[in-house]
Image 1 (cartoon, helix red, strand yellow):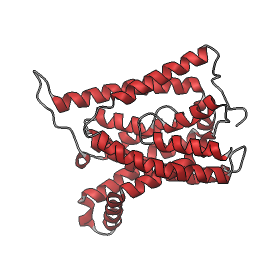
Image 2 (cartoon, rainbow, N blue to C red):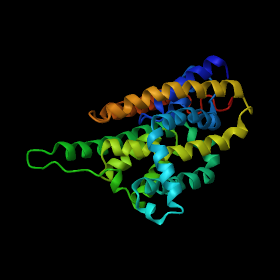
Image 3 (cartoon, helix red, strand yellow):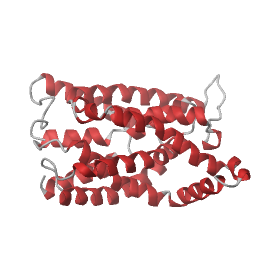
Image 4 (cartoon, rainbow, N blue to C red):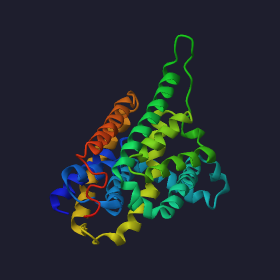
Length: 290
């Protein structure tokens, strides 16, 4: 991997990680369209550490408060009813599904799941799911001629059941094209949470999974065509770009619909199918060299 490739892929990772359009799919597609080797699951997992570092800084006050309350709750029974302490436990509970499935499906994640036909399918299907979830949220928020505005849930309403459902939704992002934020935000909206609450918990829930996945994949750096230097460079680029994107996205969702992302996902998925059917793009582009 050249330094230019690593810069572009780091830029793509930072731009797409927090948007509900799938960063893993875009890393895979960028390489395929450019004629580069597939960067692989290891590169993807490690570059995501950069964007998660952006989450740690952006939400540093929330995270510090949650971690402090959680540790105190281990010895102080009165703290166990504290919302922040409970959030700490819920993030742990919500991380279980992706941890179990990530280890169980490791070979599939690094192989069959990277087929561009599967990515095209997940882009379209999850785009439609996000569209439905967004429409239901808008209906509750706006009400209608014969319907009153319905109050949606916040993170104070989050319990173990919903936390596990969020976790299962996050685990779906092991398949490129699903999108970690897209799946968890869709799940949150379908469960009745506000856009801001769904996005906030989505980002917090991703921290343990992404950091653990990145640490686990460190052993594979240096194998094949991906080396340490370009990987670290891409991770740094992803951090700076990702921080700017998360700041913008958290403001965007308070007033805007997710429909632009829905349209983009569906259009990209259809384009992929057209290119593959026409023989312009191989569903396994770059894999053999990677």
